[in-house]
Amino acid sequence: MRAIGGLWHWRHNPLRRATDLAEAWTALVALLLIVLAAPLIGVLVGDAAQRELQQAVRAQHEMRHLVTATVVKKLARSPLEPNPESASPRDTRSRVRADWTGPDGTRQHGTVMASLKSPHPGDHFTLWTDGQGRITARPLDTVTATTHAVLAGFAATVLSAALAESGRRLILGRMVRRRYARWDQAWERAGPDWGRTGTGS
View 1 (cartoon, rainbow, N blue to C red):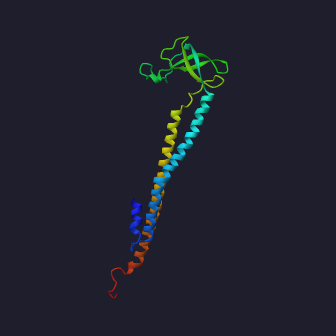
View 2: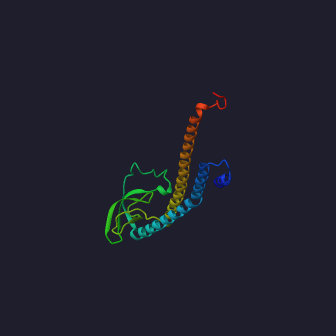
């Protein structure tokens, strides 16, 4: 609003300098970029991210499979694993030797992290594999993908607004420096005669 007020204030003011009007226009353009362009950029970036991430969700769910594994043997706890007594339910995982069958029918055997607090031989648990039965990460879910897309759009909005404001400050700083330089030149020209006008000296 200050930008609009500044333009209106300098519109017919006889003391208006070209730089005053330029500063007001710069502020107005920056305001429009922040209020209109930055949110539009955020929406476009968020929409593009949403499309890409949802496509990744579909692809991952097609390529990754949830299979049932059987515990063969519980292994000693690694020092890097959380203590089962103090771990949250989300962290109650144990290292085990297990057998499982891949989606393509191949038999697999290896060391995995089982979502069991106290696994025993013969216990069953689920894990994610690729088409050949190799262990892979859990596929991205739709809600997480949407959250990432919203965050990407918000970040793009903030970054665009920050760039517009930085550009305004940069332009304004250059205008002020040029104005001070002109004042210095004017003072240098008037300096030798300062205070002696009309004294006859």
